Amino acid sequence: MKLEGMTALSLGAKTVLNSATELEAALRFIGETRYHSLHPFHKLLHGGKLNKGQVQAWALNRYYYQSTIPIKDAVVISRFRDRNIRVEWRHRIEDHDGNIGSEGGIERWLKLTEGLGLDTAYVESTEGILPATRFAVEAYVHFVRDKSPLEAIASSLTELFAPNLHEERISGMLAHYDFVNPDIMSYFSRRLTQAPRDASFALDYVKAHAKTPEQREAVCNALIFKTNVLWVQLDALYHAYVEGHIPPGAFVPKAN
Image 1 (cartoon, helix red, strand yellow):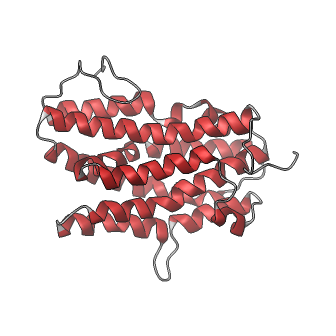
Image 2: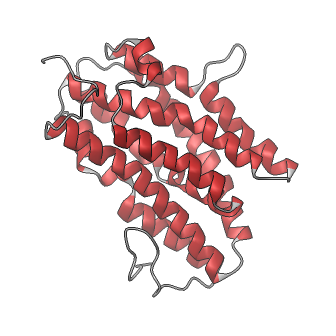
């Protein structure tokens, strides 16, 4: 499916989705054309074109997103009276926060930042992240709080496209950076199984519950919003650490 009239904000008035099949096709088109795997910063990261300080800046800023995901998911859970949905969704929090005696995604991400030479207390403080990172991530939490429960679930559908990106990231970074090893990349290898499971539930949910063209449009717009959340974080990283416009107070890499 090719969507005509899609803007930076929405699906556009020209597209009317009349079935769940058309909805899924539209969602997959949005991912194919707007997912942040296409961003120039990722091309540099995976192609070995960044120095260690630039990779550190990416991992530091991305930590804020990763550490906020369970907060976002707790807000999603709070939107539902349906116990079955809450039970299904809460494993996402455990995936990131971990549980007693088990490691979660946030701990795996801190392994990455530590392995890259960043101080863990500094990473966890989030004092050095870019303002745009903070604004984008907080906008995501506000979105799932303020929009409909259907849109809250739909915004997670970028997970449909994550496994390919994780595979590219694992192979590219291990191949090109001598300061990267498989142990510190464990976050991504674990998400290769977690993301498809999560995406399958969310996709089935929106296909079943978006019953009108207007609801299907809202689902697509939620995914567009989420792709913007991810894309703008990379815009900020590129502007600050590739073009060299680091805002006051943000992380400044040591000379490489």
